[in-house]
Length: 343
Picture (cartoon, rainbow, N blue to C red):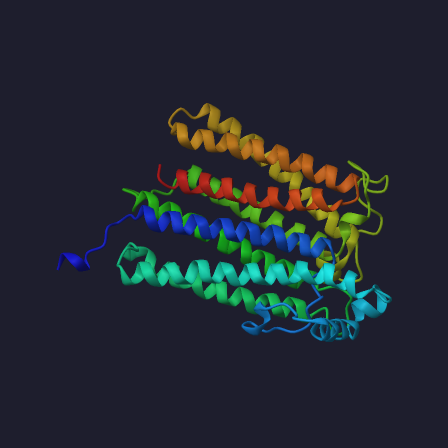
């Protein structure tokens, strides 16, 4: 009978999940680089299995290039591109997709092994199944995003890019949270406190800000209004309002960038309040207080990176750092929310 009992914690499972989280982090960063280099539409077919292999030989490369030449991005933006130039963007997208497949294997294979060995805490099994299902859905969402740029657009639809990134970040948060649960075991109590509500609200705000950033990337809004703190000399850009509410929220460069700036200001203000309250609350455990300081430090770094990325007109290395910083901020916000849940 004892062989069927499960411990409430498993450090091995926690380490596995943290490795998965690291792979998701890499996936998001490479995805950002793929977007910044304009490489996301270089592979025009979705082949979940056979697509794991790159083109083999000159004829295969010519065939891939010919398919790319049929889409609007080539005809309207990249006409005259050489095969070697095509290969440079192809490898970004192929690497991104290969990393996605790798993340799936890094999750699925150990999951089956841990499940067979009965090492996963019982209360986390269904959650892990849910994470596996969401990972599979992410592949479908990724293709749904790419498909939006193959017929009538020269880039993917911003809202689909935000959906794709949002699902990846949600998976990241849930994998980190589950890893922490596996490491520490079930909490003795889970009381609803102001700290718990506030920390979860802050985590939600950071997540929303990441989605606003995805809309900026999807509309190329970072390449316009490159002064700060003004926007083309104005507090609110004159062309803030689009032709419709949806246009204003997701497709208009001025409003999308302005919304992302306002989100950054609000999160910075919330962080100041968070850290000040943590310093004044003696009942807050030292570990939670230190995590609040970490949140503050990452927010400052992310603000600096964001401003630098904007005024320097999004150089590739800074754009990648800014996106990586967003994921790091999401990670420390998750750690803080998880810790105060156990007050």
